[in-house]
Image (spheres, rainbow, N blue to C red):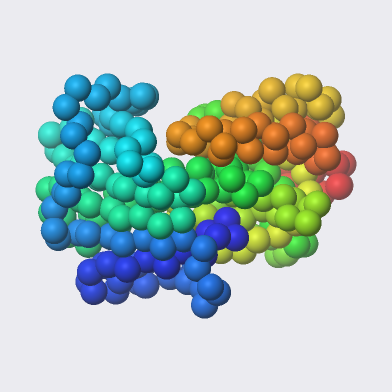
Length: 286
């Protein structure tokens, strides 16, 4: 995921379910860079006293604690809902390369997979990538003729609509409708699909060279303007995945955003919610 290979050890039933889900297409035989052990049945293992700790940030029905202890990165994620309570407690080395995840209360494999994938593994990946000239981006990604197009914007701007318009078109493949990874490797930028999205049909493990970034919004007609470097950097800063808890990773993301705004063509795109925008992008912009 994002060009990062992780070795995940877990209960046998969890391994089976992972293979049967969208995660299956992300399997790799490459040497792992990250090693993770998931404990789905053993319950939480309290190695750090949480008494008196205050969340560094929280949102909706979730609270996250992030702190360092004994040379480790410790992350606690709690649900605030009575319908689906859970607590994930993770302990990682400071470089985010090895660690363990504990779940409480003990959950079935499906529930643990959902919690780990959506609320924790994406956070791990964001911090690890930040140290590797990479970042997670809240955006839709499409591969068109092996060139990566990014459609970024806040909720309601049309990312899922854009994914639907490109879905199943000849020569096009949707990488994800909600979250992407971008990395700078050997001076070039690559765009990666990820398994977390709003629609599992719009997920691909494909990675392609990054070609253009579009900041989208609905409009009465299709139109675009070129964004300058300063405005592009400002808008890109609004899109990264908000899970960075490591100073080195944060600095890496800020450097990458600045480089992206300078090196990659960025556009403001107003579009109508039909496939005329596909033709517009192919003919007018490309």
